[in-house]
Image 1 (cartoon, rainbow, N blue to C red):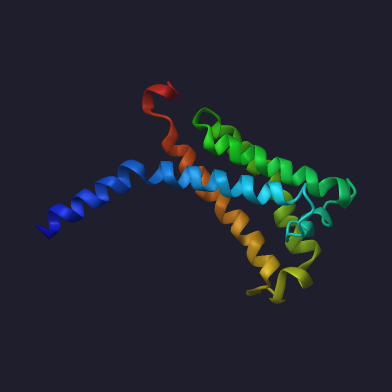
Image 2 (image 1 turned 90 degrees about the horizontal axis):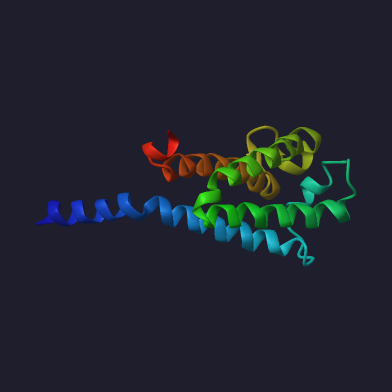
Length: 144
């Protein structure tokens, strides 16, 4: 009886897990992304102060809308591959922050990240989660 119930639970996880993961990441990107253009202070402002090509007051809303675009691409299944492209374009700024602002990213360099550093590490982990999700979206026939 227990093995049968375990099998049903894991079959449900296998069948729906990536979809739930993809949708939840999409909604989180939209939620966090919308905070920025509407003036909520987030740790992404660190990225806006790392990339000097654009003033932070312009870059922060832009990063927010970029995250909204990533979220929409994750939610709308045919666009998942574009969410990965958008994340790859965004990730160099994340990594650059560790080198340009180590005093902000770490409590003790390099092993104890600050809350801001933890946020940036989370961004890198989400990129890899997105790659895993994108790998499950297309069937073999779609790739041919």
